[in-house]
Amino acid sequence: MKNELILPVLGREIQFKTEPDLFSPSAPDCGTLAMLRHVSITSEDRVLDLGCGWGYVSAWASIAGAARVDACDIEAKAVAAAKKNLETAGLPVRVVQSNALDALLFYDYTLILSNPPYQSDFSVAKKFISQSWEHLCLGGRLVMVTKRKQWYKNRIAAVFGGVKIEEDDGYFIFTAEKRPMKLKEKNKGPGISRKLARKKARGGK
Image (cartoon, rainbow, N blue to C red):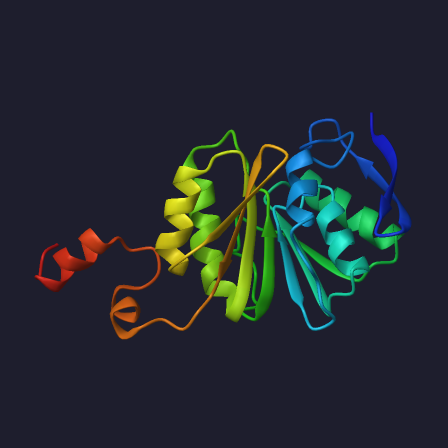
């Protein structure tokens, strides 16, 4: 049985329909709300809602005035729900089914927002982070919220070269900016450890 929600989104009341087996079906997740309290949107932003669920973050970004909002999720039910909710609200968001960012064709995002699945192993988050770096334009930001700190801090810093961490309502909000890589970083590429880079430089396999 579907849940029918009427939720305030930046001063507008939006109707959402969700499925019981989707993530946080009865209300926006507290981590998502904590993340959005630390995000600002401009009229020039090109936003990706990575792991969109039933579409709350996409609706928020669109109503906030982003120039373009895309959304993706690996689950067909989530994609269907998000498409229906955003179309009903009259919000111009493109929603696609995708394993992480595999099906995303744009590499010019200024902002990627993500609340990655906590219950999976870190392989999903690792893919989210590395592919986000690839799909952001220079100066673009990844904003990610989790309840775990150290692994995400280390991984995001390894890929992006640095990360800002804020705490809100028991969650950690990570913000990382895509900056021009130095020559050494270009040679090893994002996400390759220093130890592996040194080994490769010595001709190791």
